[in-house]
Length: 295
Image (tube, one colour):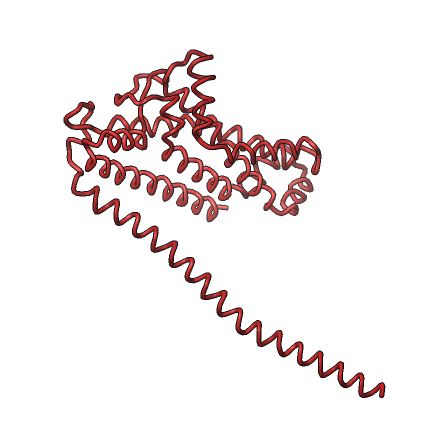
């Protein structure tokens, strides 16, 4: 009787294992096909978006769109291009050091699991989820009105810096956490201090991840409109200083499409904006690749 029960249990176990193997063979191809379908849908949407912008915008690219001064006839985007580059550079100059040094403190100096670290991370995640229009309202009330900076490049750059600071900080933190502790231990074993270890060992190893965060920040800065309308303004002129109002390419495209008089020029602006974003992303990826190979 005991032998029969053992034989029956063994048969049930083999049957269960057979069913699991058959189910795994059926589910695995289905999941693979689903993943492939999602990737194909994403790629198709991207190609369609880029192709639609190029088809609608390239025929309207004219030399008058790159005139030095903007007027109602040529609706030149050159002032917006220069303002975009200035806004991007100033925003990164403010937020990247803050984000990187905050991540250095959280990973290398703060006690792991401390309440302060949890509060900072929760605050960063909360800031990352706030809509851009709320940042624009804050920037208008604080930078424009309270600090009396008026509509200016500086007010817009400060607002954008607050917006992208959480992404720079979190990506830098994750990149530094991914650096093996053996690198730090080897540096300490050679007599290097903590500060030298951070700047000579940890940060260079985490540089590709840091640049990925910077790329995300650049993409959000270049494509932002709502926050800049309330802080930087919409003046279509080349700013003489950071206290002058200016419009970026995204705001320029929004203004042209809203007026409804220069729809073709708005699509042409979208083409230039797309090219600028691709160039910035490609340059950042090239720097990251060169950095990785040089290590």
